[in-house]
Length: 215
Image (cartoon, rainbow, N blue to C red; front, side):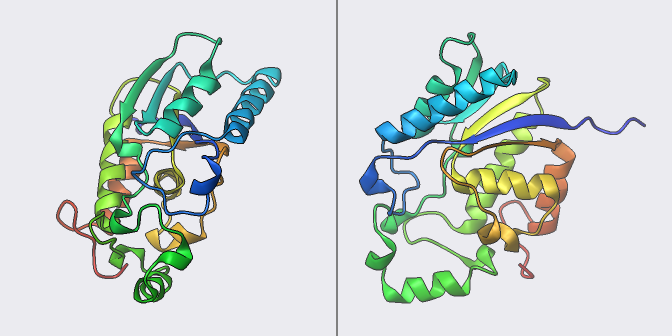
């Protein structure tokens, strides 16, 4: 039986946001790109075009404004790509801690956050998402995206959601989440298929949405 084909994906983390948002926990909050953020996306697009890199014709984009703006700049004037907006590529919802800096977080939570860096499945944001819910949302979205028949696809998301795609593609444990670095305006490619995602979910979840206790 022929093995499931790997899909080539071009992933791009949205550009920098307005200055005051850079130091804050910004998940579901919806700030625009800063002028520097717009410029960096444009520079990257020009660089890719100059190098002859063929951008995908089908894109899945987080429905947050900073991701949509990044998509518009990245693809402007090149062709009329197919775009599907999705909440499955959103950043984690920081809930009560949205728009707060690290120093503004309650000290008790800062301690908890540091303690759970090695075991992120235990992390939860008050009035926001549990880390398990975030993983469930993003990985379910990945299964949906990879079930369609397109070949190369583009993804524009956020640091957290794209980190999970990277972990799923490499079959890496979720404990590596905080050690995985993705910067604003960073682009990279990977190969992945639905089986990779399903296997990753099986490793880290019991019943749908429930993480195993060893993570």
